[in-house]
Each structure stands twice: as C-alpha cells, then as structure tokens.
Length: 223
Image (cartoon, rainbow, N blue to C red):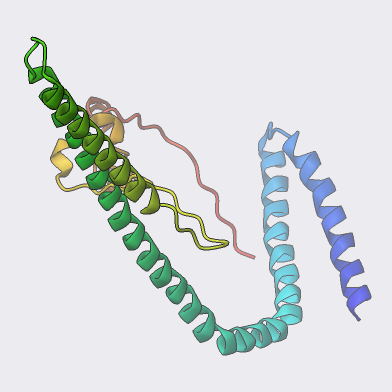
C-alpha cells in the first residue's frame, strides 16, 4: 500500500512539474489562448484538491496518533524547558553579582595603589633619616601586599566554574520611549500601510509618504 501510494505521488509530481516548466515559458497572446489557460487553471485547482484530499486521507490517522503522543510528552517537555530557563537565570544572576564584586575589589586595589603612589610623591625630597626611610619602605610593602591580596580576591571571585557550563556577558536592551528612536531603527508596518491604502489613500497622497502605488491583477479560480 505504501509503495503504491508513493509511486502514485511521484508520478503525479513528475507530470505536474513538467507542465509547470512549460507554462513558465508561455505568454498569452490572444483570447483563445486566454480561454485555454483559464481552463487549465480550473483543472489545476481540481487536481490540487484531489491530490490534497488523497494526502489528507493518508496522513490524518498518523497525524492524530502523533498529536496524541505529543500530548503525553508535552507537559514534561514544557516543564523541562521552563526549568532550564529558571536554572540559567539563577546562574546568570549569580555571575552578574560575582562580576560586580570583582569590579569592586579591583577598584579598591586601584585606589590603594593610587593612594600609596600619592603618599610617596608627597614625601619630602630632602634626605630622609634611617628611621623615616625604613618606615616609608614598610608602608610601601604594606600597600603592595594589600594590592596583591585584593587582586588575588578578584581572581578567586571568577575562578569557580561548573563542568559543562559556560557563561558570557551580553548586552540586552528595551525601548522605553519610541519617540526617541532614530529613523534607521524604524520598520514599515505592512498591515497599517495596507489599511491606509484600502481606506482610500490616493497615489499622490501615498507618494508624499514615501509609498508607490500601482495596479495589479489577482486571479481566483474554483475547483
């Protein structure tokens, strides 16, 4: 049954594709040819309906079965998808908080180093006695140690990674005021334009709004 049905569908496809190739190179030159093409159009609509009905008869039982089985699995699959999103959100929120903490620590280290440098520059240029020199060296070493500790803390804050999980920072956006959007970010709304044209907009009025109107022909046929 399946092989016979497949053979029938392939024979039909081959015949209709050959006809399509011939029609695409055709031009209607007179009324007789117009009538001939109109008859072919009605025949084509009828053949399409017949072939489509045959397809539906074959696939409807299978589609119903597929729909039934999909219904069994859909709640679990949907729940897993939502669970994945929730878990990703938890990880993303944690990574964002950790990144902020890293930035804070690095800024603190930068501030410590900057203050140490300012203190060194503020020291008198005259000869410093042995005690003063030793104290300056101790202060510098302490500042360097503090910077090192802060840098290590910043490194540690981003060191932990879960196996098989990767994160990357992306930029998100949302529009809060459409009036401020630049022209290049605006897209024409085809439905609204069609509504305007159907409401009686003239070609002259449309041209003032950047729209070109022209007449085309739509042909319909009953099977």
